[in-house]
Length: 95
Ligand code: SF4
View (cartoon, protein in one colour):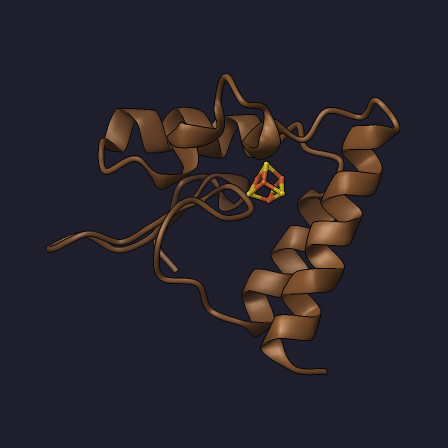
């Protein structure tokens, strides 16, 4: 499966959850800017919200296979200069 196919599958999972009333935080119009924020505290809030997401497992599977360097994905806060990416699911340690 190509990256674009894997991303398309993940997006389908996200919208299926959301349309079924299982809220996916990063597609909530009131919150969605958090996932692309440059502000570390906002990124942490996004990553914490990820831990409640019904698509978290599928999102983690996708991002483990297809590294995404920008934004928060699957409760992982992106690395910035002088700092490693942090994983809230792994207790905030570096990866
Ligand atoms: S785990 Fe986080 S980034 Fe992934 S779909 Fe859910 S809210 Fe979005």
